[in-house]
Image (cartoon, rainbow, N blue to C red; front, side, top):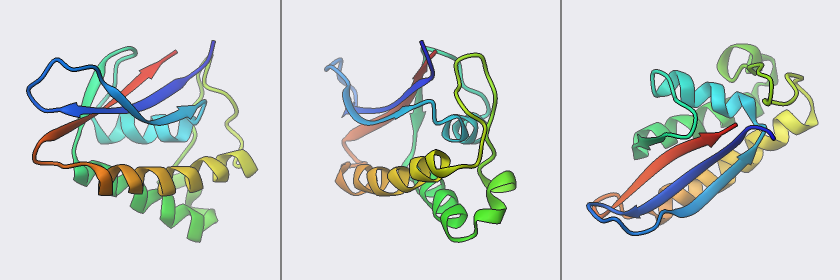
Length: 123
């Protein structure tokens, strides 16, 4: 058991199967960011995200990677029974680096006119 988070995409207006394009495990700072950006998220629900939302995530992760002392205010951790560590350690910063790399790919490889992207968490 634990906090598992995903980005999925598919063609807009279809019932085709969602394609996983990003996965995080116990990256509670990312979960907290989405919770704030989406005005709350519900476990096991699909939450639509826009290109601009994902660009904001990349920007904030990049900011903290450049200015680590801002981590507490820009990308704070959040606690929860299955959410993992709340330390600002090598794992925290590794999650941010991977997020910048992989979410940038999602942004660039998504046809935003014909595809939709959702955030999903399960814990």
